[in-house]
Image (cartoon, rainbow, N blue to C red; front, side):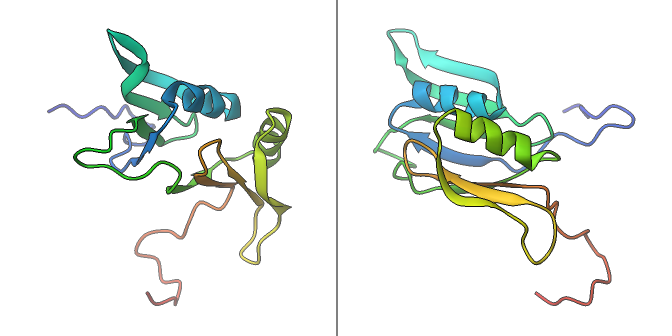
Length: 146
């Protein structure tokens, strides 16, 4: 195994959000319209509409992995996932979402803990929240308890 980190760059993500989609091709189109990048898409050679695996990376870090819904085996029902995506430009992502016809479930707002965020539902019902809150630093003395 090799270290894929280059000096000055954050390490590659090691936790990925996963889900399944009834129409994985449409989901790829929807998410790339919001700004995700389709890094890998492996489709069934006999049925290109069936996506075995898709990796969509968020340009600012992290990403999601998903594929066409397969009710057998390890499976979650489509539309039951939720994600929080950090972005430095929440307003630009919101504008792309509105322009693309996304169902906005929570309007652009300024939460008590600072920054900006909004929520949307993708075409299959998954909940997505986009905001510039990056979470609390690890091991910090914030005085907060879990």
